[in-house]
Structure formats: structure tokens, C-alpha cells
Length: 562
Image 1: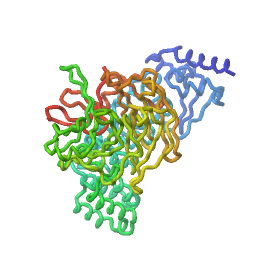
Image 2: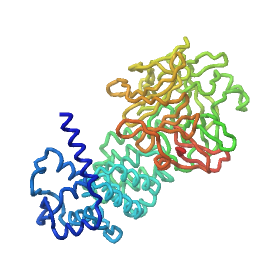
Image 3: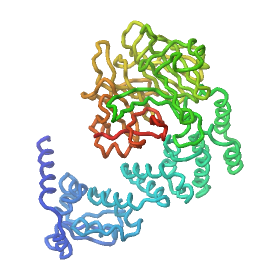
């Protein structure tokens, strides 16, 4: 069986290499000389050559070299294909150049759809380039829905980037109505959506629903639940309630959302989920996120790690917790000192919560402290309790409404494989499934419905090359990846539907995890698509804000690999 498969594969490659399609083959097509296959499409038939079709189309190559019934047929009936579009694509296969720029957008989309079906890579690329070239605020949403419908992931991702960057313009021209529900949800969930206030998103939802109110109003509550409600003005909420009173008035889910908004304004650190975080572009927000930032200064050739709270574009460093950093020394003396890179931190509301770490005697701490970015002072969280055990060099993340801490170095100076969940509702630490590998100095990131942890050191200070994934629904950890070239100091980042690893000892040493589950050295082009540059300075960040030293600007940036 293996020998047979090998012969088939060799045969496929031989067919692909047998000819290089040129305009001369167009004469064969027009004259119908030496044809050996008839394609019947709709009310038309096309006399073709198997070897020419197979050389340009993986679809036909598989049809004519695999054990399909069409392999030995002289006629093949292809259904649900427009014969006019098929004629254009077949001529392209035989060497005819398609002037896409002279065609209507709908025709190019039909050609692209058939190029996807017949797996004609070069034609796919030409159409792809055409779409990105003519993309604007008026057609981008329709293009995104089209690409999503045909599962053209790369094209869809590029268009969504454009929409995120030009979302306000899309609202102005009301092209938002052309988005599918799934894409609209994906966009309004994004932290980096380019809107100056959350109220404008309410307008976009109204535009989308009103375009087909009988079919779309059932999605209203779901769409509202994905907004950052604490940042929407009461006037806008009242207006949306009055506009869609028949949907909202009996919705228990909406009432619960409003209750959360009220409670958030009173005790924001009790709310861990995404709905309490402002978006990157929103103006006049006190606090825009907690970040772990690795900055490389080209002129100094040195690295420095810091955790910052951002308050009205002013930076408050957390790496030192001592009297020299703050004016109010009495406040600082109440809190045990937490040292650089030994703790874990997350952003909750307008506070940065810091877990564990070591004191001046290098002993692991079980304390939890909070930096209030509105009052610019250190406090204790409202929860009123410590970690379940002293830990340093641990990792922490927020998944939905819960905080997870994992790994680290315990009071016996041993690496821990324990994982704890802080349940917001019960205000208690609950032990969940342990890691497969005890580790410290590791990285954790939330990707959709999973938690990933990777890298770190074991008790012998040896590098750990494995990555584990936690499924909260099943309460299980599984080893999913291994990267042999991993360094001690890494950053693990999820952006644009991909996982990235940056070796912080070498800013441009970066690996990307692709759809096939393997890690690849990321090229500059791949990374630049996910990048935002800030005045020429390179940033790696876990959160959504990076600030340059001169306070001239801020944004999210993933550095290019060089």
C-alpha cells in the first residue's frame, strides 16, 4: 500500500513538472486538438487536456491521479458552477491573462471562489492582491464576509486588520451592515479596535441590526454583552433601550449586565473579565492596562524589564516597592517588598494586582498587593486574603471571571506544579489540575478557551522546552508543543490568531506557531503584519499599552524579526 501511494505521489509531481503553461496552450484549447477530457458545466461543455488542467490545478491533479471514478471518464460533470466564470478560469489555466482591474468586484469574487475550489494557487494570489488593493471603508466589510464564507483565512485576517484600524470610517459609511454576525462579534471583542469611545460601538450595532431588523434583532443582547459597558454613557444605554424595548425589557441577561456595571463602579477589582477593560484607543481613560514590557534601546544596547501602570499617559513603575519611589512612605512600609521579576501581576479594573514574589531576605511571599492607578498608591485588594501558599517566580492570568496562578518556587525552594483558581464569586482559592511539569519563571497566555504555559526552569535550573494547555471545562493539562531552541528568558504572546515566542535575550529571535501546530522561525513579513511601531523603539508586551520613554505616544507593538 505504501509503495502504491509513493508511486501516485511521484506521478502527481511528474504531471506538475511536465509542462509550464504558456499562451501557446491557448491555441490547443481553442482548436480542441488532442483533447482527452470533456468538462460539462451547466449548459456548456469544455474540451480540455488532463495534463494541462492537472499542471495548474491541485483539484484536477487529484481527480486524475487518485482513485476517483473521474480518473478514467471521458466526460466529467461539474455542478453548481457558473459556466461563464468557469470559461474565464479555464482560459486562465491555458495561459490567458485575466484583467481583474477591468472587472466588476462581484465577478472577481466569483473567479476567486472557483480558484479556491479548484486550488489554483497563482490565481488565488492575484485575486487576493486585487482585493487588498481596492479595499476601502465602503467595501471592506462585504469583502470580509465574503472571505469568511469561503474560509479564506489569510485574506479575511488582512481585511479585519483594515476594518479594526478604520472602524470609525466604516461606521460613517454604514458598511458595518455587510458584516456577518460572527465577524461583528469578533471585531467588538477586540482590544485594539480603533474607536475613540465605546458609545460609537452602540451606533455600529444599531446600523447592523436596522439593516435587517426582523432577522438581526435577536442578536442584540449577545452583541451588547461583548461591549465594555462600564465605558458607555448612561444616555447611550437609555437610547438603545428605548430603540429596542421589545427585545430588552424582558431580558434577564441584560439586567444582569447592568447590575455588573453598577457593581463594577463600586468595587472594580471584583470583576476580572474583559468587559471591564478599556480598549486601546479610548480617550480620557484613567488606566489602559497592565503590561510586562521588554524594551530594547538601540543606542544603549541593553534590555530592561518593567511592569507599568499607565495613568493619563504617565508611567508608574512596579519593579521597585520602596520609599524612594513614593512620597507616602507610611503607605509603603505597610506592604512587604516585592522585587523585580519574582512576582506575577494582572490588571483588574483600575488596579494592578501583584501576587507573591520574594522579600529582601529572598524568602517567598504569600501576600497579594495592589497598585491603585487612580490614587497612585499601593493598597491591599478588597478580597482580604493571601495566596494559598508562599510563591515566587510564578505565573498568573485571567480567564473569564477567574484568576489563575500556577507554577513558581515554593517556600521550600522547590518548583511547584500546583495550579490555583481564584473564583470571583466565592472569593476563595480552589486547587485545579496540576501541571505535568513543575516549573518556575514560565510564561502563561490565554488563547480563546484554553490556557497555555511554556518555558521556564526546573529544580536543576535546566530549561523546560515543553508547552502545556489547560482545558478549563475538562480540568486537564496536556503537553501540546515542544520547542528545542527555547531560551531562558522568553515572552509568550497571542496576537492575530497566532502564538508568538520572543527570546528576550535577542529581541529579533522569534518563533510563530502556525495552524498545523508546529513552531516556525517567523519572518519579518509575518511579524510586521502584527506590529505597531512607536517612534522607532521596539516593544514586547503582554498587555495592550506600551509607552516610550519620552511619553510621545503609545500603542501595541510586536517587534519585527531581523
